[in-house]
Length: 129
Image 1 (cartoon, rainbow, N blue to C red):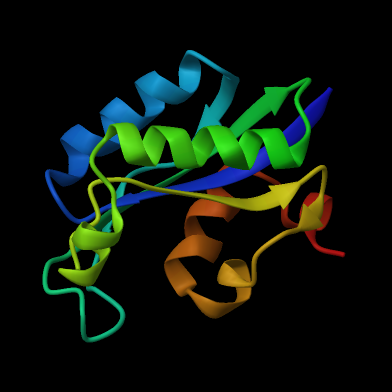
Image 2: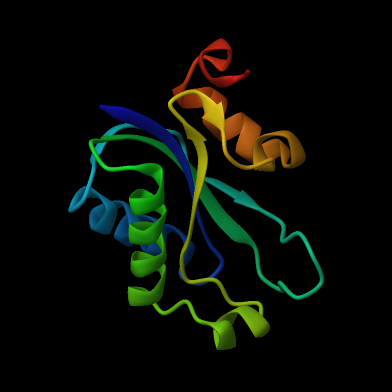
């Protein structure tokens, strides 16, 4: 069994889309914990509206590669595309931050809100190598 810490984000219909992302993810994975929901200012010039963010912890028998592929499928189902990215619109963003305790993205170190939300659901020593 694999454990993952996943960041969810959206800057269109924030809380509603975060809820929809969780619902879609629960069709594929068991969600075993959720952080609070946090609204943050956009990072980067192309994004104009605030983001709604949440961290979740999932368990799965799938590989990390398969899990990320499922994330991309869900993002596309929710309307994310190259066109929406160019416009700075993110209806769904799903990022694998930790996989079985191993950091997969530097977002944890780079963004205070990723660290804060991940820390809510997991003991730091469990996934910092």
